[in-house]
Image 1 (spheres, rainbow over the protein chains, first blue to last red):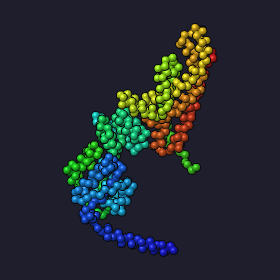
Image 2: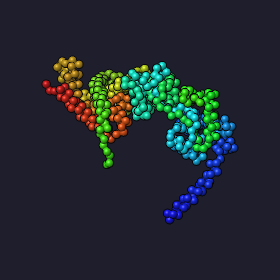
Image 3: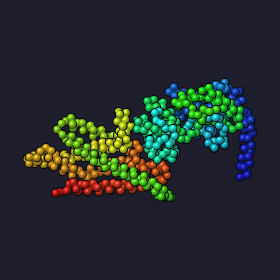
Image 4: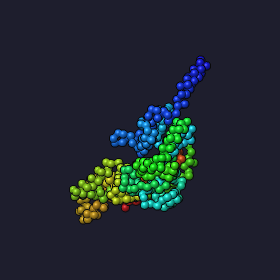
Length: 265
Length: 220
């Protein structure tokens, strides 16, 4: 019985291997140009990367970049809404050609997929009113910073600031943001996505990036072994960085130009 | 239960807990003194001859007693800065606690005042006491003595309610507990100790109130 099951397993495995073999040989870039469609996994619930706009159309920097790449490849774009949990399975099962979904690089992910060059900023940092002269953690001495208690920014910041810094810890993200908007604190430590949301909603209190605590930029994700597609995507990204279009996307969606480490080609 | 208690994980944060307890004591004491003073004033207003004053105090009491404390706190801390009044977390916490304590103690003290028999006041008048003397000796002192246990309970409630001010980054006992919990994740131990500290505080404050009452209402 046991042997029979095992044999069936082997047979099934062989069948899968046979079926998969031709697909693996075909080049994704050829497939895209042949079908004239670029399928991209994009987020739908994570502004400003990807969300549903008031006109019920997807919008965000990831969607804009997907359209930009498709335009350069001279093909139509097909946006496939994904969640952060299923974006990599969608790529692995070849339901999409690219993942442009605020995807960060980790050693585990590098084992199963390839990454393009970085295209968008994703970092935790200290943000504050434009007039305040803070460039690094040491400059925070004697100043007051708001942060969400127990958040990763709290843990990181608490270790790096001088002893005479006052850290005001709030219960949740909303309270931290409210404290900044109400003027209870002029500096907050949070993510650049939160900062972008504040910038968009409250232009009265201008929020500038003071310094970066931890950076984990976003990359376009591809299947392994698609060297030509990867080269093409990187070529397009480089061209868009040079032309300033990517920078404009950053300003449009984050309210700030691309950080230097991402802008460099 | 297979939980491994590790109380020694809390020990490095002992000074944080101590500072938290101290701030809770300070906040509550200030709120109690000012709140009861506010309560006496408002109780006077509530039982005054002037209809407009009774109405104004009535609005205040109904507004505070029928809204959650945390909303009042957020109103003071996040709302008032828009009107140009910016308070620190501790100031905002005290203000909200005084306003809250004031409203409840007004009703408690009013009950005491109304329990004073008219004949007592008439007796005072016939002894040629002034209005102020009557209020002080015949009305408010016996009134406070009558409702003193209720006032003590209300005070304990305010002390326990002060846990909420950790939400606006005031670093009292609950803030300390949550902070420690977010650093070493020993929630059970932290809240075990915190519960015990609140219990001690409540019992301690009750004893202090008893002493104060014994001194203030001594039959001399």
